[in-house]
Amino acid sequence: MIELENVSYSYGGGELLSDVSLHLQPGSFHFLTGPSGSGKTTLLKLCYGALLPTSGRLSVFDEDVARLDRDQMALLRRRIGVVHQDCQFLDHMTLAENVALPMMVSGRGAEAEQNNLTELLGWVGLGARLESHPPELSGGERQRAALARAVILSPDVVLADEPTGNVDWEMSQRLLHLLIELNRMGKTVLIATHDLSLIRAAKSQVQARVLRISQRRLQLAGADL
Amino acid sequence: MSKGDIRNLLRRDSRADRVVPPTGFTAQLTLFVSGAMAFLAVFALALSLASGRLADRWASELAGAATLRINAPAEQRAAQTEAALNVLSQTPGVASARALSAEEQAALLAPWFGPDLPLDTLPIPQLIEITEGEPGLDAIGLRLRLGAEVPGAVLDDHSRWREPLVDAANSLRRLGWISILLIGGATAAMITLAANASLAANAQIIEVLRLVGARDRFIAGAFVRRFTFRALFGAAVGTLLGMSGVLLLPEASDAGGFLTGLGFQGAGWLLPMLIPLLGATVAFLATWSAARRKLKELS
Image (cartoon, rainbow over all chains, first blue to last red; front, side, top):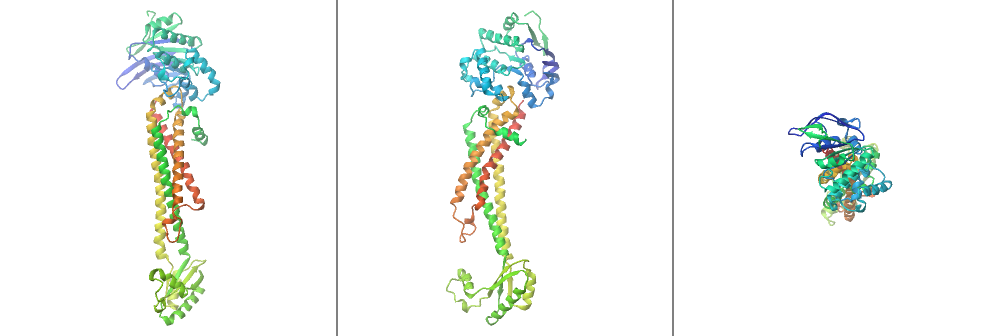
């Protein structure tokens, strides 16, 4: 689904990631871990085309990302659901509108999807907060709403950047459970997190692989977690 | 961009329009600018049309006529007038020639000397009014012939004072059109600034839309629609006010001359109706190019 071959990425100052190779297989479940500032978010951004590699080859759904134009990139993002670290909502629109935003921008019918939307918000436990505005929501509610928005177009891949960063343990378990459910439905899942206990909790429920960024390189972590 | 693209961009989509939060202040500024510019454009248009009419009128009225003046001692005047009319009747290009009567000449002079002037005691030259026909009058040939047969005749084909007047009216018309172009350019510049400000203020929203897979067309459309309809509405109000202003100007009259002729006549009233459409077109193009430029800067 997503393939990186010897990908490097450098900001103006220096190299952040070098020689990264990664193949995300359909239906796989990956954790991405590493210290703060090691490049977890950068690697996720590379995966959904928000950043382009400085060198190396990156292909998503068998398409070379470097060769996509802006419209093709937009279409690509509809197939990848992203839960951002800071959620990124439009604060002047209601929760329901925010979650339905990917449908709106892709021009899908509103009425037919209304049931889907209600069902989806019920699934993440936000059925009662449809008309709230994002600033009125708690951290956990925002994360769950972000997850609902990420999957509303039924993407093949779900990328989550520190989805449990701002929530308590119980809520992080709920989010993890939702992500595992998505994986059981066949979605490829990649979660960036520095929360090792979350990874341990997941390992008992799903066959998860753990990738670690260390000294600019990506390694497959052993079973020592 | 094809016609269908433009139609799609402009189709009202209340859901998509909600994506960009309403901004009261820039909205009012855009309305005001397009209204004020449309108001000015109405006057520039009225000026252009009026001076165009004036130039055409002066050119055609004066071009179709010439005057022959007989400067001769009183006892020869009648004979020379007779001879001149005789020459004129044989000249090609003269549709008709008529000696003015004493009363008509007195009426012409009255504005200058007052009605009480004893004209019969003064050596007033005799005037002959010539109306030109097809083919045009050969003024040089006629002058040569008159010089031989009617020594006291002076032909004035009006070109000497007609040309500067027509030139002046034509320059005025040109100035009017240049003003309209400048008004259009200034509108485009101001709407571009407003659109840029709005795009910059909403950069975060644009980023979110890009992240959830919105195409540039969708994002640009939300802004383009907003500015186009604002400009259309503002310009419509400005045009209406401008046209009311023109309507309130005094009627064209001979006494007032040029200034009171300022306004629209007949089908000319339809022309200012195009101003809101042109304003909306200018806003559409300005916002579209500003949005495309801005979006390219973002990832």
